[in-house]
Length: 221
Length: 221
DNA sequence: CCTACCGATCGGTAGG
DNA sequence: CCTACCGATCGGTAGG
Image (cartoon, rainbow over all chains, first blue to last red; front, top):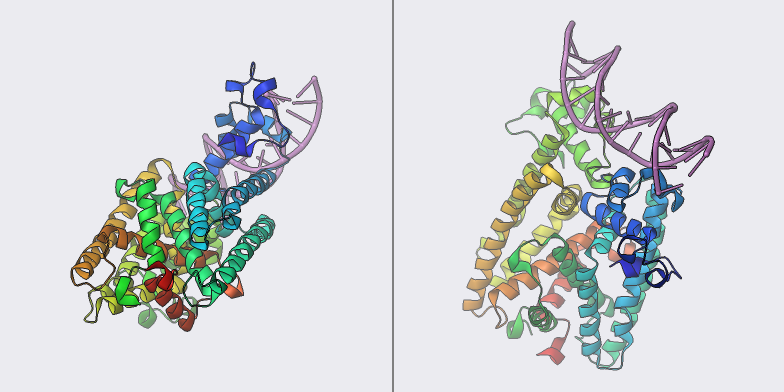
């Protein structure tokens, strides 16, 4: 988790491992702590003092890294989105069949969420729960990221449709159905503490194939 | 919106329409205002003073209706869940075919979300973003509601599977795929300010049929 | 990275 | 439903 949030260019594990906590820099711990707390309690529900306590420094020290709580959130979002982009999108452009590439992309997206659920939780908080001036800054960043994500998927489905690799439907509808299913699986994972909602690899593939073929089965064709 | 949040047994529109704002009782306006603000800014991001200002009274007056901000949230959740239950579940037990009943249920669920998006936003906030003692109270309420919702769907899919009305798969997997798709559509609606993400009735039905038959179409059978 | 502190606002109460 | 007020905590700063 911490590594994807590391400040750019840092080689902390080699150079500073002796003095810092477990070799993780304060900035890394700040990012990880803020991500976890924002995800748990929301942005408004988390104070800078809460974050400082988890990092293990005094509140005033956080202001050496960010000029404000708002800047901290924005940096967290920017890093998280870049990481999500890099982890999920490449699979779409792979060498296999359309069906295989979409499955690889779906699996990568679910895995990213399982491993970095705090980040995905923050994306959601940011997209819906922040108003005022900060809300406008966040909206700009989020919508930019979402646009590039959707564009990639739209062109994938346009291509798949022409190749006859998917159902005979409007590519935008295909893209929408896929995105909403993925969206639901990720959202479901975030709120899932239940045992029966666990997503091991076997069940994920079974459920994906069921989604691909349709829950209506032969009756729906 | 206000009517589903009205205090039980109130006949406000007939008896008090002369003096209160547009005939809506203060309690009604309190519930509606709190719902809108919690949905917009999150629970921690909304103060009692914010709510009072929208209602049009002083902060202290809110404490005539609820002993605490936590109690206000709990009451809001309870009312909202009962409303969602009543609006979405009956369709599942209707007289038509399994496919028709599931579509009616899906459409009712989407409509409820479109009309009461603040409530659905609060369900999500409550499920993921509140910790501590309040978090435990909320979890208890939410998981109770979710359990009855899932039980209803599980038995529907068990029944549908036996009748050969759905794909030949584990009813729990069928239920999961359906719930996650629905989940995604609702979540998508909450964050959607975009034009291309609008859900008119035609598109909803088109997209639903595509989901039912599978985006893989003939290639996936 | 710390101690010490700022004005503003938090949820909530007293008393009417 | 109001005015007036409580101690605690908020985001942030000064100065080292």
